Image (cartoon, rainbow, N blue to C red; front, top):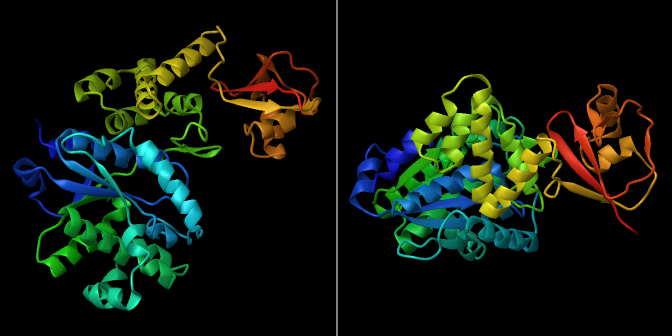
Length: 403
């Protein structure tokens, strides 16, 4: 079995490591590692996808994953990568989100077998902490001067960093220590925005337990222009099919920029590098074939092969003129007549009536292959359904239902 460090490095995941000897350590023993997810929503999004894929590669190489769900730290909110304070969540909301995360993560890691993954919730040890004991036992190992140099705090100091958030680094470091003590977990992995927090945890274990703990960060999913991938007109690209339909999910990757295809294929699929190079090292429009493979493979991982085949077939038939619309994103309406402008807002193809008007005026809206030119046009009847198209690649089905 190949060293997982080589696999992660070749595919472009690795950003930073705490020790040069991490690769050799992977050769010597099966490593117990952990990765954390704060349940600030009821679904993982595409940004979490990279994390889940790294955990999957690690487990496939024989190492043991601990999936830490931050039911406790979510009560505070991670300031990393933020310019404002996160919204406060109730315990009930967090518990609901934890259950949603568990279900989604089971698609990436195996919870059975020799190196079965386990899920832990840091609420189990954080919510009942005695504050005085915690500050005496853990806080004594942290230098405020050093903490203020961390990148995650620097960005917030300009707008104001609450003492609540300042505690987050201690909480995450304590997570690492707790998992080290309970499961002999000696490696934390995470996105590169977690570097300061991971260093803090490894340093806490070194100082308190006199032992070496490792950290590894991987690159965030960025476009070739340096912006975070996964932003859509409707917001984040979610892994939950109720929040982002499999069709929309597939179409997102089918339509990414040519320059982003190879990197995304390396990070978000299990295709061998030889196959990726064969698909992506091409000229001109041939890259579109790679995009089809990319969209299918990613949708298969997240939504299953059957669903991936269904949306692939729907997309190909639609663009080929056959008009298969079964898997297309759908909005139900119960009132006619309705203006085209109101319909665009209701289907979320336009964020506002003003933007809807602009789309129509620019010739960007068609209904059942008929371009809409009148901003005041009304929809007065719908037989089975109608298909609204925005631009060349965004389709949406509208169905009339009885009240």
